[in-house]
Image 1 (cartoon, rainbow, N blue to C red):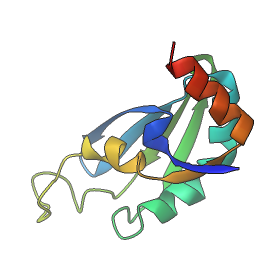
Image 2 (tube, rainbow, N blue to C red; image 1 turned 90 degrees about the horizontal axis):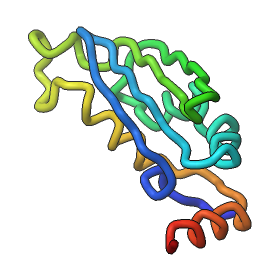
Image 3 (cartoon, rainbow, N blue to C red; image 1 turned 180 degrees about the vertical axis):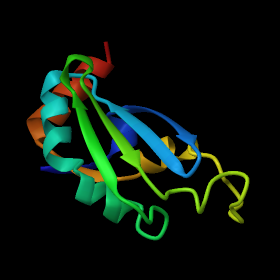
Length: 118
């Protein structure tokens, strides 16, 4: 098993509404989507954002897009107009999630690297 940051094998899109952040995580292949289902759980995302997300995290699976969508409540210290944080927007959460390290089977990672060289 290889340990890689999500940024090496995924794409994200994130935004906010009030004190809630939405993060979509996209896999490039169905095989990698299966790895994301196993590795990128509500609990692992909550741990990754420890100290930042105070509320619940709900994961929605979107298999036809090879995506996971995370709705993170109480994530912006009250929201943009009341927060004293330097960055009060949710768009940074996508790139922050991509720092998360997950385990990927070596053979799958090798296949992805071969595909990327084409």
